[in-house]
Image 1 (cartoon, chains in turn red, blue):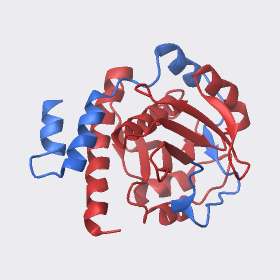
Image 2 (tube, one colour; image 1 turned 135 degrees about the vertical axis):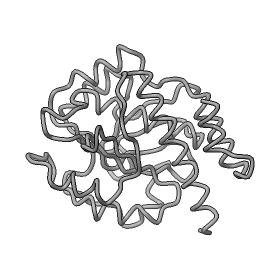
Image 3 (cartoon, chains in turn brown, blue; image 1 turned 120 degrees about the vertical axis):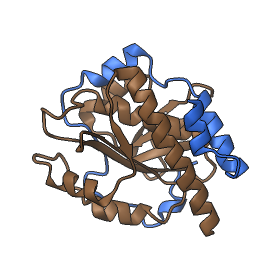
Image 4 (spheres, helix red, strand yellow; image 1 turned 90 degrees about the horizontal axis):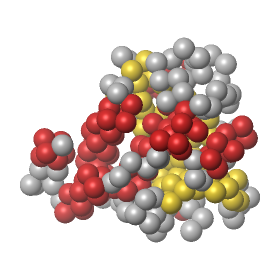
Length: 172
Length: 65
């Protein structure tokens, strides 16, 4: 993959962060910081207490960084990280998948309750940018599956037996 | 919004980038209010992904199309 291709996707992600910032402000009234999953933010996530899964976000970032079209999103308020996601589009751009999504486990963080729809609204906006037709969440936590169904997602299993939730983008 | 467009997709941006930006500009909100509320009212852990943190070896080709 050429540097030019990496640069193009960097430009698209930079525009995406600006559009998502405005969209969240419009939808929720929250002024949030929207960015790539920077190392300083990863350090915050690794310090969260009572995490459901002890993921190594440094390793996750390292594994995804060579994929030019990767989806990476961190949402913060006044410097406090509230949630982050890492994923990528499928090769044919049918869908864009969130492989790892985690919200701040502190029950008093500034976007408590809002962070999940905000992160997924972001995934959908990036999917639109890349002309994908669906967003997909790989291996959603059990307790959330019924909520995803309420929100219009369908649940299925992929070729390697992973459960996923999927929802079409609006123009599909 | 026009300022965002000018900043993020200036004339020297490639057509690929400008088209992606135009699609974002035109994109409707993804969740309606009822769907948004269904997700926002969840009080458990907000997490999705492999519990062990495993990442597919051939990540770029992992797409299940």
